Image 1 (cartoon, rainbow, N blue to C red):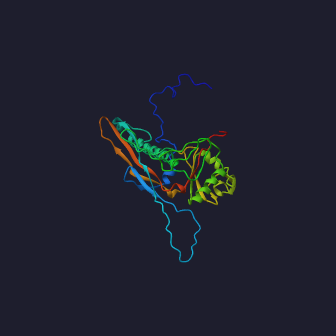
Image 2: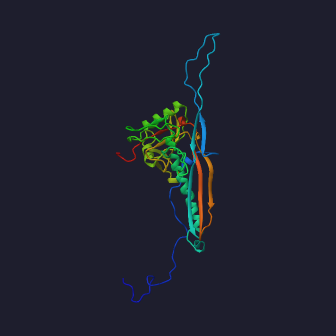
Image 3: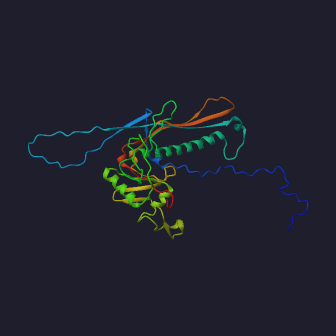
Length: 322
C-alpha cells in the first residue's frame, strides 16, 4: 500500500527527542586471577628483597658407637630481590563537561577514572606474567619488575632450538624456543618435577587456547552428569575442568587473558606475592587551565618466594598446526 498524499510523517518532523538509554554497556574483560590470588605484602624500598633456602639431599646416615663427630659444611641462604614498577594512568576532562547532561553517567571524570582503574589492573596482571627481566632504572629509564617467567628455572617443560631457562633471580628473561604442542604428558611431567622439588601446586594459569587443549586431557573431557531442575532435569555434557587430580597434587585451572598463550604456569599460590610500595590511589593533579586532571598510580613488585614450588610448560603452539 502507498502513503496518502501530504502525510506529515516522522521523517518530516523536527524536534523529535532522541531515545538514548541511560546506561553504558561494557563487556570488556577485567578479571585478573593471578594478581587477585597473590598475597599482598608491604614493600618499603624500590628494591624489595627476600631469602630462600633448601635442605640438602638425603644421604646414608649411620655411625659406630663412640666415634668422633664430624661437622657438616653448611650453605648460606640465597638473597633475591625485585624492583618495584610504577603503573600510572591519567585523564584530563574540560570543565565544560560539568555543565553537560549525559546518558549513562553523571560525571565524565568519575566514569573515566573508573575505567582507568580497571585498565591499570589489567596492566599489572600482564606485567606479573610478563617474560621480562627486572630493571633498576635511572633518571631516564623506568624501573621494571621481573615477571613470573623470569623466575622459573627448575620445573620446566620447554620447546626445542634456542629455548633456554633464565638464571632464576629475575635478572634475565626466558629465551623462547621452537613451539611444540601443549600435552597432558608435558603437563604431568612438570607436576612430577614440582612434587620432587617439594612444591605443592594448586593453580594453573593459561590462555583460552591452551585451556581448550587441557579440556582434551584424558579422563577430563565430555563427562556426563545430571544437572537437575536448572536445565529441566535432563542430562547435560560438561566440557570443563574444575580440578585436575594427579599423583603429584590437585590443581585448579584459571583461564587468563593476560599471560602469553605460549606459557602455561603451574603455581603454588602461597609462594607468590605482590609487594606494594604505593597502594592504588586516585590523585587530583594541579589545575593549570580550564580542565580537571586526575591520575591513578600504583607501585608494586612481584615476589617469587621460592621458584621450586612452581613450574611452567613453555613454548606451546598457539594456533592449530603451528
